[in-house]
Amino acid sequence: MSPQSQGQSASGQVQTSSGQTQVQRSGTRPPGDRWRLQVVHRTRFRYGGPVRSSYNEARLTPENSTRQTTLRSRVEIEPAATAFAYRDYWGATVTAFDLHTPHTELVVTGTSIVEAGPEPGEHDHVGWSVLRGDRVRDQFGELLGPTALTEMADDVVEAARAAVGDAYPHEAGTIVCRFVREHMEYLSGSTNVKTNAMQAWHSAQGVCQDISHVTVGLLRALGLPARYVSGYLHPKREAGVGHTVTGESHAWVEWWDGGWCSFDPTNSTDVGPRHVTLGRGRDYGDVPPFKGIFSGPGSEGHTVTVEVTRLA
Image (cartoon, rainbow, N blue to C red):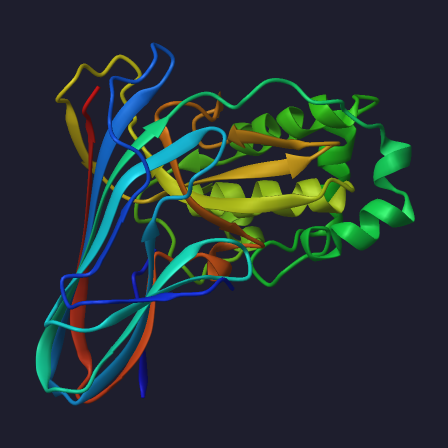
């Protein structure tokens, strides 16, 4: 079996070959501080000959939360396959499917309509003494330790610590985000999904995945529980209704200081109505939009297109 990836549990339900559809709420016009966005995410694999079988997972269904409501979501698979939807350990919706008829191409398309807004109100922020306590360390142990993609060298951690100084944890999170962005340039195509945080840091460039990995690694090293967030972004702050952008998946970070705080370090901005959340994890490896394995000739490559349109 060969792996295939995009290159960047709750009880389930069986769906037909047309994919998965979820309707949470009828669509009325969103309030002024919320955007309604349509996301179309298409991944196409081509193989060097007929593939006999493949086993796949897609994380293309946006979440429902206090900030975001998914009005419609559908995952379509070509060639036709029966899909099974479940919620993974980290809370993301996974569409799992396998194919056992010969095929030379696989196309997976996720189409969603989402209403998104700013993060809901403030929470009570805790101090460093609480974060260093056994209760927090027990509760968030998985989000405090390094992973292969997020581990940072001691000298970089100390530089971040110096930048934070005596700041309270809440402010420290934002300081770390800006510290990373000041050092790293966003450069599309400069890294791949296997690039780790220190490799990206040494090159001083990367994509949103790398900037988020470095940020998560430093937040954890300083004692803030932190997680990687996978999703989408409409990059045009002043976009009008009907404005479509073609881009890629996006990533940002969250840290816990008595409640969860979110920030987009790549764009040095708060997470708000232009952001659509798919899922969270320790790093990219927990929430890839697509991954799978197949049996047959090697892959000739794949393409990914993401279109985000403001509907209201």
